[in-house]
Amino acid sequence: MSLRSVEVVSSAVYLIRSCPKLQDLTIEFDPVAVEDIVEPVVEFLRFQSFSLGAEKLQRVHVNLFMGLEMEMEFMKFILASALVLKEIFIWNFVYLLHRSDKQMMDEMKESRRASPNVEFIFE
Image 1 (spheres, rainbow, N blue to C red):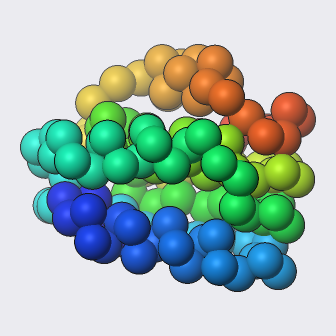
Image 2: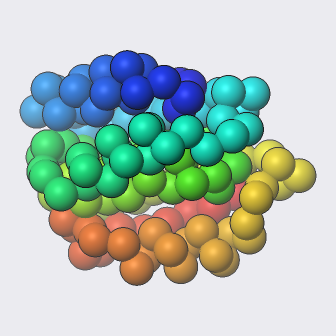
């Protein structure tokens, strides 16, 4: 998924919110397309994190995560909208990370969460 386009991101948000039985979600970010911060996408995602939507989502697997602001905002949206989320598994290319695993985990743990007992797994 490319995070450079508000249309693509809003479609993904719409699909997540429109699937009330969704329990497992796998996202693969496009590492080429997220080199620069796209402010409209960041603002759109920040606005989305104030409402619920993924009511049965339990597990999220994220591939090619680099820790960029747009990716972090997308993860905050997931955290804020998933009521029964149990696990977020983040797989990345270590050499592509823009911040440490600890920094990312700390930021996610500090963000608003609909489900208080989420386990974060970084690999």
